[in-house]
Image (cartoon, rainbow, N blue to C red):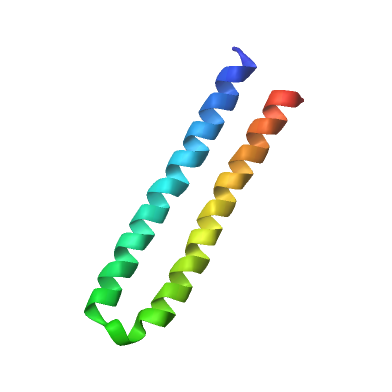
Length: 71
């Protein structure tokens, strides 16, 4: 098969899954803040940390796609 197909599939899946996860995390964090507004700062800190880890997965997918493309 063509290498470009594998690159496209890697980046598509590697971007879609973290995007879904970030949306789900944000939704749950906003629900939690709605239930307990006093804990908003703690929830927001945890949410931002979790979003950073999700974005790291997308960056790993980009690196893998570039390796597939150029090696």
